[in-house]
Length: 100
Image 1 (tube, rainbow, N blue to C red):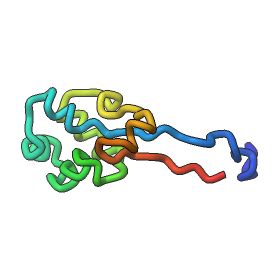
Image 2 (cartoon, rainbow, N blue to C red):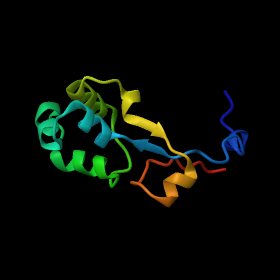
Image 3 (spheres, rainbow, N blue to C red):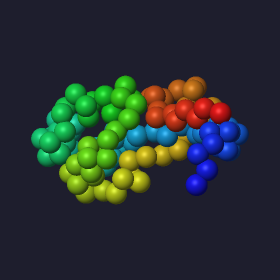
């Protein structure tokens, strides 16, 4: 395995933003964010920040609890967003930053 940082330079020049679709998942399931907080044992404030895009990441344990409570797969909660649409309107997204 090569640990040379320059080996990855230029491999991924630009990554598409990833949006966490909690609002859509909650609407589809018919539960409120408050009920999801109770069912998932995830703090309401955390869920609200995820729903509004103010939180930029989610841990695997939190994702697992959300998926279990909503009876969905993790893939149902994420989408890759076209950059032009992402920056023109809509909530913030999780956008990976790659140095290189």
